[in-house]
Image 1 (cartoon, helix red, strand yellow):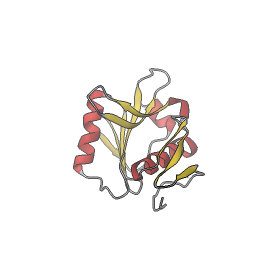
Image 2 (cartoon, helix red, strand yellow):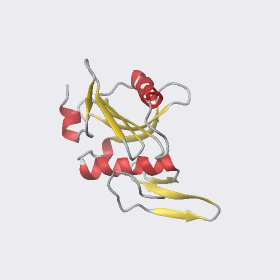
Image 3 (cartoon, helix red, strand yellow):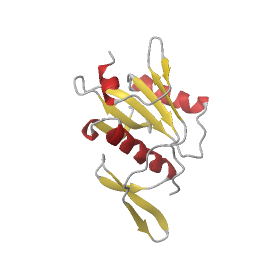
Length: 151
């Protein structure tokens, strides 16, 4: 996988498979998963959150259903006090632009799974909002402390 992402590199564990996409070890799901371009971004986000921003891996959830048929959020971080989602992250492949459509997808997920923050990323560009009222756009990723201290 090319590493043109703006997220920090990490010691990934890829397993090559002849004639098939490689597998990557997911620390949250504790299993190997197919390493698609979107998964490559998701794994970088997981390691960025846990390794740089203080998020506990035990409070992360990957590809969890929203309650709507077939809809799954890419990544959630849960508040340990309330056990409710505090952060939703929608990951896209690096070739996918972060458009209004991507934001609307994340907003639809948020309607079913409300969280304090929404982030959309393709691994190169990132956009973060603290859900309001009023909604506030951030120019960076929130740290774990910021996510759990927001009321």
